[in-house]
Amino acid sequence: MTEARVWSVTSTTPTEKDAQHIARTVVSERLAAGAEVTGPAMSVFWHNDELGEGQEWRVTLKTSAAVRDRLANRILELHPWAAGPEIVAYPVEWAIDRYADWVEKFTAATE
Image 1: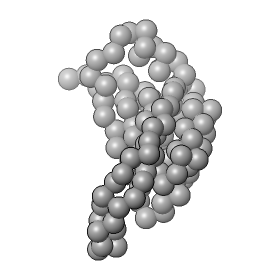
Image 2 (image 1 turned 180 degrees about the vertical axis):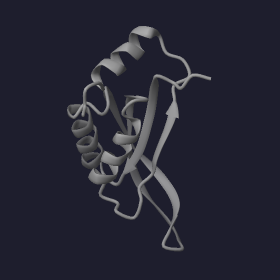
Image 3 (image 1 turned 180 degrees about the horizontal axis):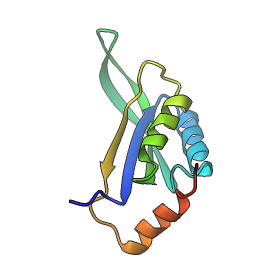
Image 4 (image 1 turned 120 degrees about the horizontal axis):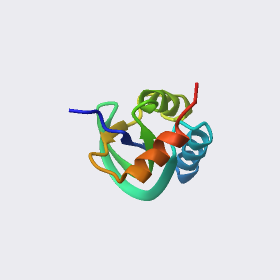
């Protein structure tokens, strides 16, 4: 099986401003070709052995296989939650070639 050309990487943040900062930074650094910020969403979670809940904002980033891991590391650097934010990635199993070409073009040469 061939690795997906396009990946969707998602993280959540405590504020819209945090999500926008991550989105703007990684797109400007060409670690993602595009970003979407959505929210707020109400979340229920375990933290420090206690049940918690609160609002979160989601940032979804489109990237290439070539820079996916670098993108995840950059999100860790930018994220306000030092204890380990959610960062998950899903391969885009199918996309039209023009879209995949666009993602790869704008996440190329980021060394």
